[in-house]
Image (cartoon, rainbow, N blue to C red; front, side):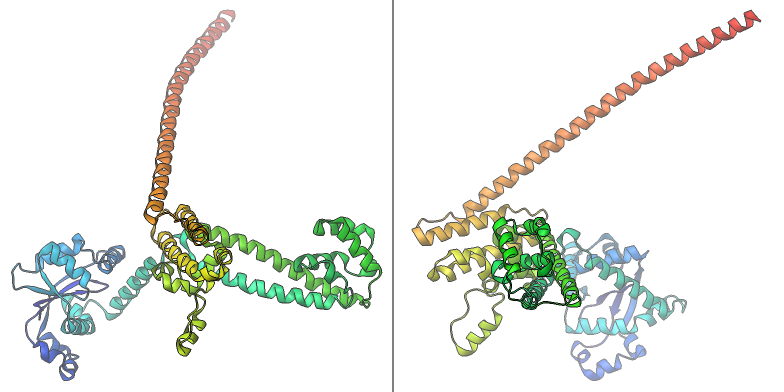
Length: 489
């Protein structure tokens, strides 16, 4: 059992000295129950030193350092002054990271065990009483609770903060909304087709596209009132004169029933809503593409923005996708088929969401499984680069895409693809060249700025001289005028 125990609180660092008790007995339930009494517990655990935090910012800084296992100077000086140096001195800590950093910096043996954690739990339970005794009952329990609440809010707020340009949760929301919009637009467009076919059934065969059909319906509206004046509006949608003439001829000889004005009005409003939904779907797709190119450019270059966004959404986040192995990425989206195959002991699925990539459609039937495994390998590498690099570029994703295309050619022709090491070296050299060029441009811009500033300084000095000379001349002129006026008088 260690002689000293380090306890971190929201108020500050506390160092306790253990003088009695047995390690075996402390794990007993009866002994633990006795330790809930402060008098019993204070006999074996004494508060030797307490270092309060100077401010809330200092408390947050120390909490962040402890979570990352960093021994800062604040805690280091506290331990150096209060722990005697010796071979038999041991320090109980609640985190192994901070224990290893203390041992490497101060040569103090640190220990984390069940008994240490039990003692820290009891210290946490009785810590307000220790502080009251230390500050002569001036400190209230409510003050300790407010300090804990404030530090917990600041700590959690600092942990939640991340790079604004890498908000992958926006991508998961956008792709789920896009999928829902696509389903809704398809169902609504089929409803419009069925509804308007009572009035103008021939239009379905002429215009097969859903959105074009709805926009044409808004122009035609009542087929009895469709005239040649509406041809330019219909021409903007169809971009084909023959189709416009075909729609006009079909409206003249249609077999559909007539609709009342109220029916046409309600139908017209509904069609407008569906067109606005389709326009919003297109704008949402553009937004998703831009966010994917910022957050995960390599995945976007490799398998496309939509499929990459679906992978991130299914994994939960970009970091969790980067931590997945290639075998898990390969079957993402086919979990039901996988568990069904494992239950029946049949063939497991070869691909899930990766089936929607263009590489699977290009591959032959016998090569689809192999190429999906290759895509999953490249996706795992691209996700790790996007998640953990500070300045990600799309060069690696483009290179991974070229490698998959080379693998497809290898399955067809037998020509061996490039090695992964050579391809990665090429990309690295390309990025290094670009960084060198950017640095040169920055240095050139800085030098140009310095030249401009020096010119401005020189120009300003000359201008100052000119102004002084002008002032002197003006003064002389005024004096001459005054003298002349005096002489005249």
